[in-house]
Length: 63
Image 1 (cartoon, one colour):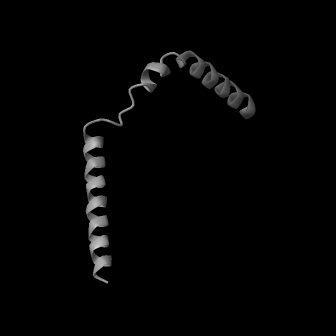
Image 2 (tube, rainbow, N blue to C red):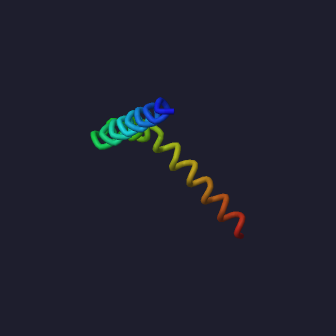
Image 3 (tube, one colour):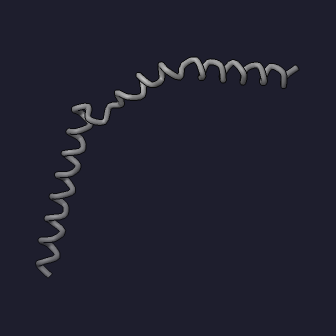
């Protein structure tokens, strides 16, 4: 029975260690997205064209 207490204690310590490592990685900026803003610039015209089309379609539906 004492083995269960030891295993539970070890698992809690390991879980807390992983939580601390995750929080440290997030605060240091490891999960920041550096790729998407540079690619978004390439597809900006397509997004504007598609939004203009939807606006035209919505105006036609209201008429």
